[in-house]
Length: 194
Image (tube, rainbow, N blue to C red; front, side):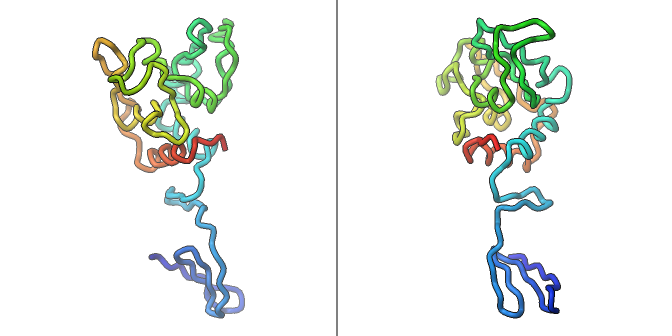
């Protein structure tokens, strides 16, 4: 247990520990344990916009040409507008490099929660029979059924009838533990668009 002491108004001290605040005058109130600190070990809800999107830009190439940017997401109407996964936080899909696709624009959150892995879909092959070809990128509340989570923690995923595994992500190497924790908690909390 960590106890922090502060000088309180009136010359007393204020201590914070285990979710309570007290002064040496005997006044006690509760502390909201859902706030974050500089350590990145938050206990409150994970924010999609504030916590998850920056991880995609920092570790998944959402801002790096050739990785998971808008150039990667070529939605095609005859493929259910699925396309390669772009993690860029923009509404994409209705056009590709200036040409119409016949698809509607989808924001990042919608692409993650409504589209399925292009790789399994393209190859028409279920991952070792454990997942269908319509394996969603993010299945709110379910890590096992979230392709994105399995891809970053398990590495190569078999979605090819020839036995070829997909490339582990991120390409640069494993994500830092604090980023993995944010994504894990976000999915487990129901992958809210908050």
